[in-house]
Length: 188
Image (tube, rainbow, N blue to C red; front, side, top):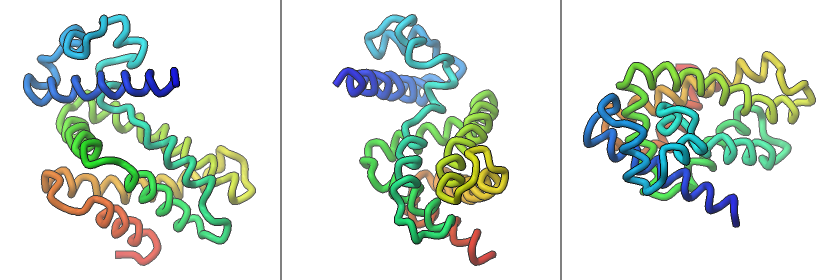
């Protein structure tokens, strides 16, 4: 229960931050303003997010995808496991959360400081997601081939996300992700 309350606070802070960034611009919005809007202290903000960039970049999807990788049917190929993990994680979120992902993605693609932080986060996510895939394959968690494969899949997903953002969310993002991943198996 305590953990759920912490997560609820975390996402409320993020929601207020994204709203303020959209209204005032990323650079013009301060941590103090975010804290005030979320009715917390600035020190509480920093208990949840180490930096202002993290309030945009952090999400819960790695945990959802790790669980989906671990619970995917044993007969799935590596691509089927990754496809299952991405699609099942994103199909469970509400429309409100999808809108929040769109707003955060727009910020990540347009604010230079966030673009760099998003790249760092992607590299960390690739390693985190590759570990359970490597385990499924009987390899060590830091297996290079598993990381390279997950990195290729993430690259495909990023292209789907870029199209989704450029179309202002006016497309089926799950279908775009699925199509992007099909390029890994089928080629262009």
